[in-house]
Image 1: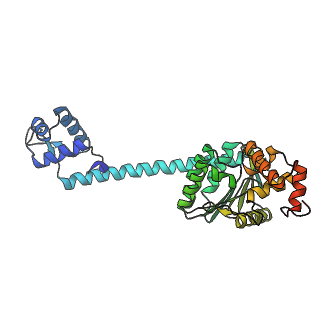
Image 2 (image 1 turned 120 degrees about the horizontal axis):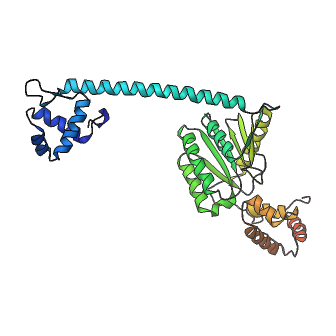
Image 3 (image 1 turned 120 degrees about the vertical axis):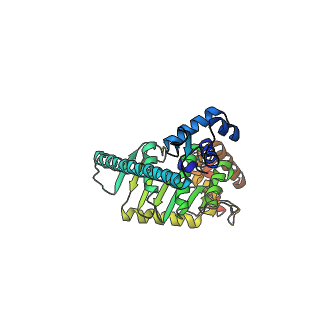
Length: 331
């Protein structure tokens, strides 16, 4: 009960016992509490240090508990002093952190384009994203291509996402349709929605992207290796265009909990995308990357579509797709 004031359980029991039996000695107190005499002596040392026990002037220096009104005042004054010291240390830490941030900002290489900041390496990207996330107040939008998300990425994003949603920031994320078959990514998406986030999926995405409060956008410098580096964009013209891209994609996307719809030809969005990519001459590896699936899965989808079209080659598949109305006359 008094642990918050600096007393451990044994010391508190000894103090209470001395209040009830002021004349009790160490042996009697130990017997009354059912603890070893050594523990009673350690507790008396603690109580003496806290000024809750003093030697009696009338009884040969026998330990005597001070009255609770005085004792509690002593403990609270001591705790208040500790809190003041801790606050002083915290303020000193803040000042040191501010100085370090200022020095780092001066060392950061200047750029000819103040609206573009380059980030190199995954650690720098994550550090900058964490700092920016703390400043978001209204909206956090994200494209998450690449199919099923890695365990490291999901683990790294959870504290940031939880902090955003805890501040009632509106969070919307677009994944690829292929994540619907990956349990860990689906569970992560459901976790986001349970906290108030919104999640939808589309067959393909142009790039990984994050937009914060319509003021800042983060995109990779290379879609082939998003961990290599990224650029931070703050130009209003660029932000408006990227935001419009997100909104257009969001409207066409399907909520994760809904069944994937099919078009008038019985094609899912993923299948329709494969038809278009086949007609454009993309390889299985390129198609797999766009869909966020394995090359084997991409080959299977392509083979099934060619079989439906009764095509023996990809070129013929493109021609027949146009004939069947699956594609416009010009691809």
